[in-house]
Length: 176
Ligand code: IMP
Ligand code: MG
Image 1 (cartoon, protein in one colour):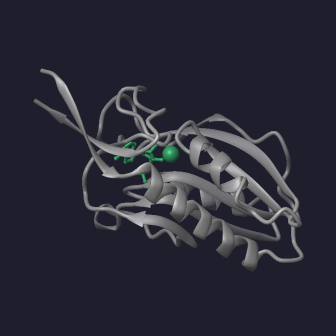
Image 2 (cartoon, rainbow, N blue to C red):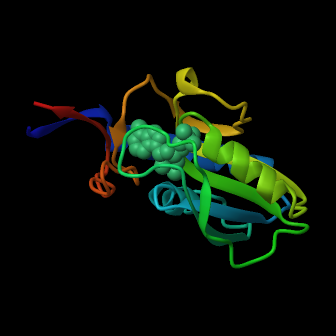
């Protein structure tokens, strides 16, 4: 079966929204420093784009973490495992987790609980996409790029069997 990709959210729409969220975050963190945590690999495109839209008078530091709840399937396995932990401690920091997409919420529910235990001064969550209709765990999202319907999406960091992360837009894969 061949794969056909259709565009759900264009590159321009994403760029505009990233600027808006960057402006909002800059307002909310005036006088503070932001310690951004990227959930690899999917969050990396959004985090780098977003970090460039934070006011330059706000110091930004970055760290990376890798957890897995998905194999090569398009459905949640329900198993969350730390594949790579953070390099730096979180105590006293204003931490902003940056994710590509929140689906069932299992990954972030687990992760936020874990990171809260490391005593950050504050802990917020920013996601490019949210599929609220799929939620199984109650996760509070502070900044959302776009709410989308229940479709499996790719691009801007998101993959289908490890491919398509580098698409500059958000697309939907169809088997034709
Ligand atoms: P959750 O634990 O079900 O919320 O899933 C979170 C993770 O699953 C995301 O960070 C993505 O890496 C992956 N994921 C969920 N939905 C999609 C999708 O539509 N496309 C690509 N990856 C997805
Ligand atoms: Mg992710």
